[in-house]
Image (cartoon, rainbow, N blue to C red):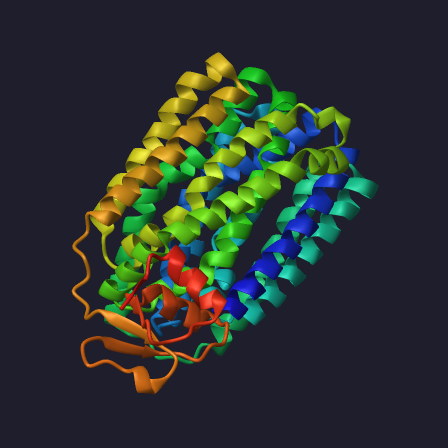
Length: 456
């Protein structure tokens, strides 16, 4: 698992660098208003992502992790057809509400089904634990898209061509990958599984309607009230926190997939014991990011975006919740706690939407930040309270040993070799006890200490 996490961390880090290079070019060649319009257009795509049934990404990952990758085909068909409604919605918005930007909305409408409706390649590869292929796919595709963006903004200039080549590049990559994966999946269709997974995907999409709204409505409100130049300041402020958020999720995705592939009782036990380590991981990344963030923004975006620094630093506070939500979130989604997941998702996003509506008119960018930070931290607290109220797993107590001569009849014996790898770390976290008769390496003792493993 360490190797997989390193691959995911490396991939996310490379993608972050590529993204920051592109952002540097955009900040250099676009005015504040143009940058704001570019952010606004993708905000509309995000707001309408419910029409592309984006929650099916989770179901494709779940199905692939549970040895039914064939669902990729079903999900691609359903989501592509449904996303055509998103194109219609974009045309309606353009013709009746955003007439001055009608050409941009027509562009979004044309590419929407290909941009958002058939983008399951990454979910399929992660769920199938094909992390090396995922890495090659993501880095290659982002290099292609980044190249197109840089060419368009430097030589053709203007938001229209930037949007055109971004959407075209992404859509073509989605088409090629969907065709390739579709062709190589030979598994027979299981009608019962397809029906169950489709139903689950639709349920998650219903739950996610407010999530789609909450993820992007702040951009649209801010642009309407304060203008696209102010939106550009906020868009830059959230770049680094969003990239770090992606990095954290990328590093921890093998852990999440591991939980998805295990039974509920064992998953709950592992998450319970890993919570403190995840908190330390989160705080360490946030502290390091906070130290270097001002320099990064000045270098990448220039002095005209210096105002974004303070907003970006405060937004980092919301990242504390990300690692802590990974465990309980995986338990909810992959182990069948749909009702609570629906409630907490609905509550969180309603808080965000209401907060944006109330606070943005009063405090502009600070109104967004206050809402995001408070919603993230309060949701994490609720998640943890729910999680720790779950019944303790009724599993036999386990003893971690390095030598078989120290085996015990009283406990389940978990035998490992003193080699640092993902499975051994999971075994250490899962173990209830270390043996006093054993001499454990320092790294094992540190992990055991952080997971409150006792000695017997």
